[in-house]
Length: 403
Image 1 (cartoon, rainbow, N blue to C red):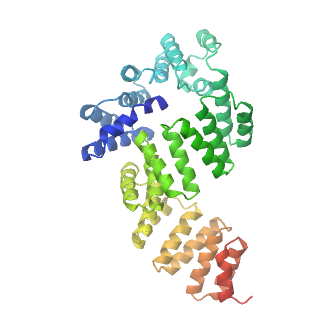
Image 2: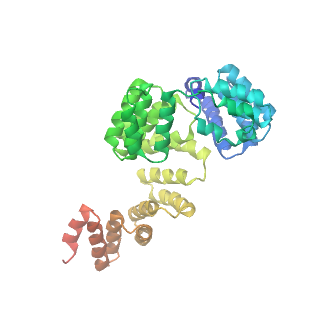
């Protein structure tokens, strides 16, 4: 995927902020979503429109090939992958290897797989050998001989091993490996990025920020690194820095739908409701009924003090996912702001039914109990909130409860 991203910055420059260009960007984003949802015929229709109405880059032909591959139209997929590879060499070598394996052309499959493994963005051996399409040729002698060759350097093997440890949630082991091979791992930005991920898994945001910043200093054009640092800034409530990083990531790679949802959240927290609204409009076009869409729309409307509209979005969220106590806690607080006290009281109770250790839910339920003239219930809830570490509850107990 990374080799395809080389062309994406030019897409952003081409699109700019012109209305027609924005529509073309939306077409491309919708294509990504349709492929993700396995709606390949609809995706192909949008891709054909992109070819006829804008400058064509290799990623369009890659995506057409992807749709045709999943439709098992392998011969047409090969044609489009070859077009993509002619625009950007080695951008579709792995995909071509898969297609030729699917049609039983073992020689060409291994030829393109060799080209892929000689490139800079090769997949790991595990990713390749576990791909179902290669099961059709894994028994032949040529396949067995092929894997006797040293396709991966010691450096690549170590990076893959550390990445696997992180994927398994073993940050301590990953850090030990990084310390052992510190001087050997290159490029150096990869070392710092792996270190940052390990620290993040250990819930050490300051160390993680330091490491990912070192990675970005050595490789400033990585949207992955910038989006990762944006999330770290978000965790540490450094919203302007987070907004700057996620915006840079979108400029480098405007075809990642999740970036727009994340920027909408960060922009809202940074006080830029106009940007949040714009990004949510894009994301709503892509995922109109998703929980994430309605959740962020609800939070945005509450930030704008539109309580009733915010509640309507939260109703949609909870209708689809009633398993998260945070949704009930958030909706309860909005209902409390809207003077819907009984609804708020019920939501705080639901949050506590799902997780009886939420200090803020006890605090807020105590507030609703007091309004409903249940002072005994209010004091019970505040004492539970204090027990779970809420400092505000102690003041309310002192003012309203008999010890």
